[in-house]
Length: 302
Image: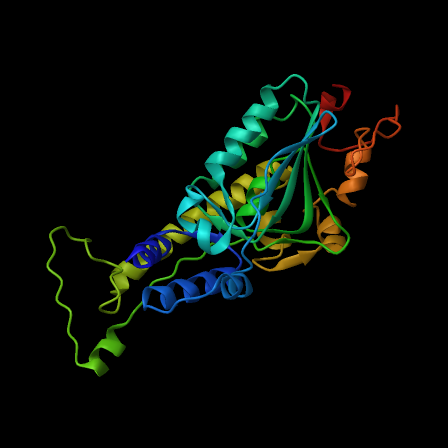
């Protein structure tokens, strides 16, 4: 029953998530809800579960905040099937780093296929509104997709590892229709309801054209918000986002830089060294020259 409830929650959500990841999660939940059991190794093989929870850490005076796995507003219901991160918890970590006077820069260490729409625009706005307080870098190693790109684009700068990818700008919604299978099994479900639209989307019958139109309108509205936030974050027009930011596909690092989706290509170690610290704990020689970042403003002087 637990997985059936999670499955229902997944179907009720709009997703800014790579298609393959959403497909893997849905397949897993359907199988679990049907009674099939998987070992920890099988779960990891199916949906790339994180075996260790990533935690925020400090490298010198730089706060490194992990954003790994599927992003959801309340990630706890997915903890045992996909790892991932709660956008609420990440927001609290980010705000703490912004308020901490000993933290001179924030690096979002990102590797995510995206996640739920709910909570994503709010987190993106939180990061965007913190620009100018201290340098905020989103470092991608190696995937920043969909909701992850929505959030990470709000940083002062996006840096992608040479073999990394960004994009998947789009929205998904999934509705089951099991009416054909029920007919073959000789099962008929009757739904009693009150309220004109109540019951739309239940899997026991095909959705009406009107219900499909309402769902598509919700998807379109979420996509428009995604595009508008990206345009604000990257300092481009909404039309540029729609036409040049992959149209729902992933874009490799070199092309993403050329298209203005990211700012530079580099490793996490290189990004840390710009702030005088090393990924391996050693302090490096701090450069006194300006880095020439297009999006970091006067925060570089902090």
